[in-house]
Every structure is written in structure tokens, then in C-alpha cells.
Image 1 (cartoon, rainbow, N blue to C red):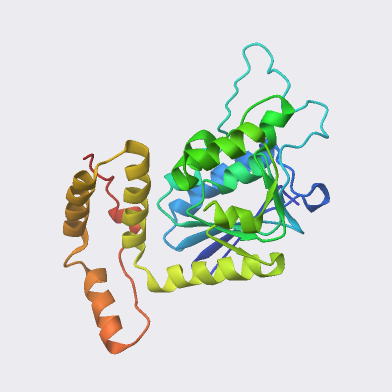
Image 2 (tube, rainbow, N blue to C red):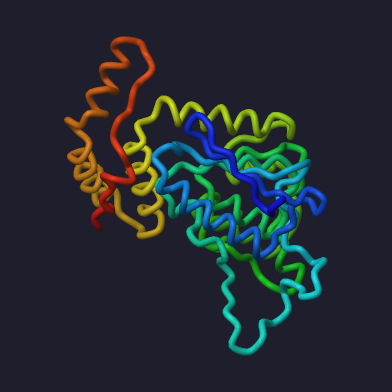
Length: 271
């Protein structure tokens, strides 16, 4: 058993945080496995969407405090340390990432989920960026993801209090894309992933995702986005997948996408 299990089928990579006996408490090994798997999936044309979930009844209850070395101890002199161990972050990939937050997500468990494109969260689970209550601060770029997803008022509430909230409130605050009963979360996330894998052109998904997140990261103006959308349209208009998308729609059949993101990818231009 490893701290992360991976299965790929029908265009979907299902990544499962896999320490159910510890409610999937985060470890350095888990983080390294997640990083490597994100990179591998993003370079694999067979993976059209990624779903991240937790084994058992929790998503991830935060850093593991059971080890001999506590996660918030000062690192030894000269030891490498980063508060952003997710590298790449989910939003830095080209492949859509759906967090199936099937149960409690506390601390780094929630801040990792915040980096996903879509978050399906259990309505009755507990959520918190609780680090301020442990004598440290939020990690995994949460001081960027939270205000961009939910606004500065919500971010201040969550980060400065470290308080706990449920899935219904997460949806109301726009942290959750959708809140459902815990036993429905993974099935719904997989259904969304299947829809993307089948019906969305892979290059279109990759370009749209990168433009969306780059716009937030770089603070583009509406007219800069319009210019970038025009340039990216010019990349895909007239392509085999653009023709196939229209043909499949008119013929009322499932599209057969042929473009390779891994082979044909070019980074997005700057505005």
C-alpha cells in the first residue's frame, strides 16, 4: 500500500489519498507521489481529466502529527522547506482536475483541494484552514486561491479565524462548486470527469484552463483576455478537432478527438 493510489480508465485518472487508518493525514511521501502523478498524467494523452479523492470517509484531515518529527517543527539548519509542497499545483496543469472532497478536509487537506479546477464537496463534512490555530499560517498558496475563488472577505474570514465550516457553507461561499451527500461526491465527480473526457476536445480544455488561471494569476484586463482568446482561437480554428466537434454535433454522435496535447502544445503567449 502506498500513500497515493492511481487508476486510469476511460480517459480519467483517479488519484486516491490512501491512508484511511489515519483519515488520509498528509505526509511528505503523499505529497511527492501526488506531484509525480500530476506531472505524469499531464503528459499522458490518455488522461483527459483527473479526479482527486480520499480513501474511506475523509478526504484529508491535515498534516500527520503522529510521526517522531512534527510537521510544524522548525526545519534543521540548511534543510529545504517550502510551504507550497504541491509542485505543480493542480491549477498549473493543462488537464482539468476535479477534487472529490468526500469527507473532512482540514488544513493542507483543504488547501490542496482549493487548487483544483472543480470541487465537489460533502455537504455534512468539516472544513477549515486551521493552521492559524496551530501557531502557523495557511499553506499551498491558500492566500492566493481563497481570495481569487471566493473574494477577500471570505478569505479573511477563513484564514484569520481558522474556523470550521460545513459543505453547505462552502457552497454558499463559492469554495465548493457543488455540495452533495458524502456518498454521492465521488460518483458525481466521476460523472463530470467522464463528460469532459468524452465531450470536450482535449486541446480546447487545456487552452481554456491555462487562459482561465493565467488571467487570475497575471491580472489580465478584459481587452488583454480578448486578444489572447483571439490568438488561441486562431490555433484551433480549422483544426481536425474543430471540424470533428461540429460534425459530431450535427450527426448527433460522440466526437472522436485526434489532437495530441502532449505533442502539439505550445505555451500561451503573454498579453
